[in-house]
Length: 315
Ligand code: APR
Image (cartoon, rainbow, N blue to C red; front, side):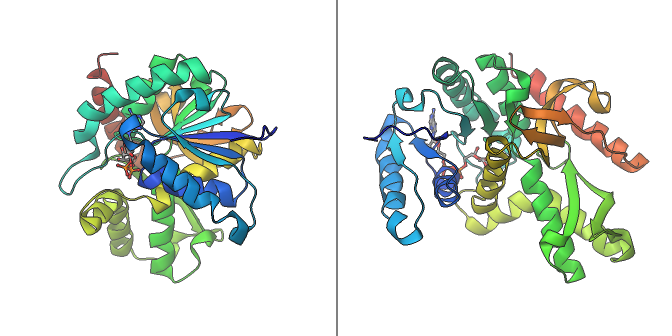
């Protein structure tokens, strides 16, 4: 970067499939200048992807500087940091199977971020998500409202797409949320799901709805199985960029995210998927939405799983 701009700075830690896709999306949306960071061994990947996107600027007409690096000095003063550093699942693995390897990586990344960008809004994507975002906050010591995890926007987008496809309408017309941990126990909420205000429970039969709930819970694994090598990246990238945009543009957007609970929904002291308001203050508020009895029970089961994973982190 040869010129100094007064623009937002977005640091993407991990220049893999999600990192590279986010760089392209952030550039196309002109969210700010972009730093794509990876380990020294993969610095060429970071630099190559950055240059490749720079070379599309004249075609797409956006104005953003994108650099690839392995040097955390380049992340200094970042406004938003999105972390995908880690390894993705292989077919047959659960997200929780990644905890051993990714815990070490997130601790390393967090210790570096702590030094170079203490004011950043940090969005973690690395799995197992709820445990990794917890680790990020503990190691950085950043305020809990400035550290969150991306899972709910993605899981909800999957649910919204499956519902819309079943009804035969546009996905953007379906409002629906998935709460809880980003694992097989996640809780798709049907009680409040609607299509243009019409409850989905009046538009689809119970068997179809049950199949959609099951497919949503297993949607990440479905993609892992199809790809055979790696996990989903287009939709996770789009989801995290929506969260970054909500922060940078102070949108006060209602988005489900892994947020630190202080008694909301009856839970305390860990990160969990809940509806939030994201604006310039980071996670500005957690919204408590009414749940059916079944949803309350399912959320409790999911909380139990997340809590036991977090308890095993040794933090
Ligand atoms: N610091 C920075 N980058 C790292 C580090 C580290 N300590 N360790 C690994 N990386 C990089 C890898 O070199 C790789 O380029 O993280 C990148 C991860 O990219 P991919 O393997 O392509 O994985 P991706 O599909 O982007 O998913 C990343 O997000 O959805 C989750 O489960 C998924 O945990 C995984 C993460």
